[in-house]
Amino acid sequence: MILVLDNAVEGGYMAGEVARLLPGADVETYNYPNGEADPSFEGVDGVVVGGSGAGVYDEPDQPWITRQKAYVERALDEGVPLLGICFGHQLVNEVLGGTVVDSGESRGRLVEASLADVPLFEDVEPLVPVLHSDVVTEPGEGMDVVGTADYNEYFATQHRERPVWTVQYHPEFTPEIRPEYDDYWTETEHSFADSTATRTLENFARFCRRPATASD
Image (cartoon, rainbow, N blue to C red; front, side, top):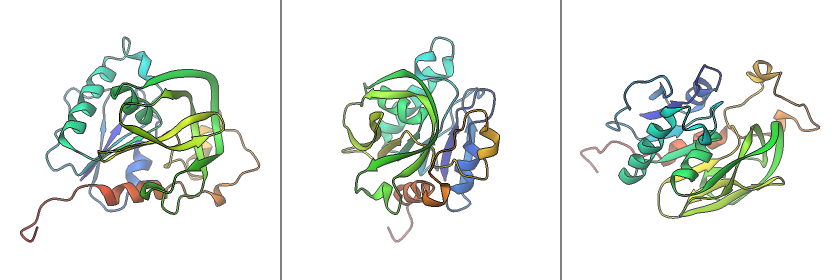
């Protein structure tokens, strides 16, 4: 089972779309800010740490962030495959000692990125949707840069030893839900027809550990 951490404090951060776009039916979502107990890792083959309207630096006012950092640390220790998206990208890097700041500019558009030739980005075109202002300014320990954008050199990261990947963009943001974000979205010369960002989720699912079988 793949667990999607829904980090929407009051709704609206696309965890349902992440779950819908992950291949297979064995996907569960858990709303972390409003949950009372951490979900178990039993039966969990991978975790997606989703986006949020909060920033990782909001920890004093959002105590769930402190809990989630500890949860991610446990996932790292147990070798659970992780994919961090937007806020998740920032949180995972901060957990590993990185730095996150508010860039002072809100971005909601399709952007051109430079993506490394790594399995996570197989068949992912370098045109991806973003919806954020916070950026990673120093990656976490062990995290290699595998994606850059013209405004941020730490746009995507991958751990050099563990099954951990993070992306600043939203692979789950598609034309189907774009109207819900009219207040935050800017149309450019780019088109969703040229973006295959959703493949990121399909690729991550391939890396998720599977339950042992008698033939293993």
